[in-house]
Image (cartoon, rainbow, N blue to C red):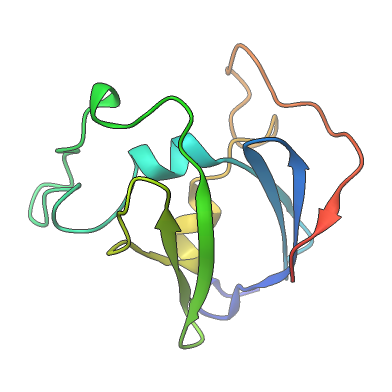
Length: 121
């Protein structure tokens, strides 16, 4: 499947602070919300030319919450956060690469558990 046609087919809360996205290629992605906030792709959080993160971990509350997910065209989501930030547009291709599951991040020390899920879409 082409990356251009990759899109979410379902979204569910996996546990508090972690949601999952089922992708059109069959992958079950895992997304801790604080990780997403720390890697916001907007120009205020990420340098547009170098891709270097401007946002530092101390700039984001430990208990950040995702307050809204708004579709943007057929290519991504705008995520709204409890700290008031809402300018990050997460393209599906970038979001798919940000997956924190055991398959995508095999060397990660801890992996969120997969408890019963709650459907978001």
